[in-house]
Amino acid sequence: MTTIKTVFAGIIGALSLGTAALAQNFPTKPVTIIVPFSAGGGTDITTRTLAGPMAKALGVEIVVKNTDGAGGTIGTAETARAKPDGYTIGMMPVGPMTTQPHLRELPYSPDSFDYVCQAYSAPSSLVVRQDSQFQSLDEMLTYAKENPGELNYGVQAVGSIPHVAGLGLASASGAEFTFIPYKGSAPTFKAMLDGSIHMFVAHISFLTQNSDQVRSLAMLTSERVSTAEDLPTAADQGVPMNFPIWGGLVAPKGIPAEAKAALERACEQGMNSDAFKARMAELRMPIAFMGSDEFQAFVESEFEKNDELLTEAGLKK
Image 1 (cartoon, rainbow, N blue to C red):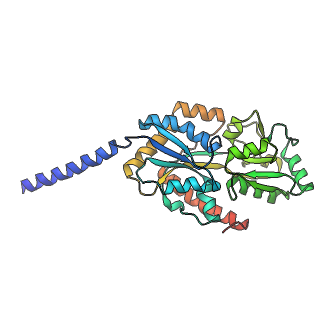
Image 2 (image 1 turned 135 degrees about the vertical axis):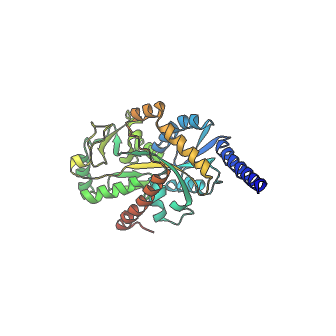
Image 3 (image 1 turned 120 degrees about the vertical axis):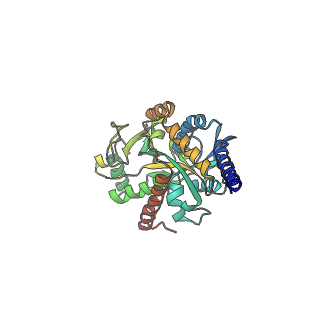
């Protein structure tokens, strides 16, 4: 009996050591983060800001890969079908995760992922060129109502949060815009600079990063942002709106628990690093970490909320 117990204890010990080794063995090679939009946009800026301190926490290189197109769904689908080993993850924004699945048939849903962490929740802003004729939201809305459809409003994808925000603005104000879709913040920005569009919605890091070329007509928040108290909100100007642009790290469904835990720890450590905090302060972006379980519950609730919004707007597939 003693011999059997000894052998059994040895087996349990070996299994425990094996599990510990698995935890210690991740990661052993570079981790890739897929960004489903073009380089230079807000999601890309935040991802690259986090990648450095997160790589330091993991002890391996992090490669940021931009896979844009189709409202962010191409890069999101690429993340969903990646090998579920923790070495390919994605920085997924609100649109591809909680609005696009309601608009078209896609090879993924929120159930296709394991959730690592929320990495940002950025106040969004309606931006125009520095030399725009409009000095306030009221001026722009007055012109839009007097000239229906003349103002072009760029959106990073049909059904994206910037698009839904624009629909909300039109509905609340009685203005009429012509919506033109692009493949991300960077090409939308380029279109505004060359005069193809008059305005678009971007999150605050993009506004700050390009403050020499763009300015805010209104923050689309219910109250002034603590990191940008000087910027008036749409609510300040008589049009109450709240459309944050958030995103977080997800992995293909089924990654090892040890890998998910390691990535979650690295995300939290990276966001708590001095380097990340300093950069977010420069971009005037509040830090908004959520752990794995909380982030998953949040995404599921946002998925349901945006289902209702898109149904009301008549955009539901």
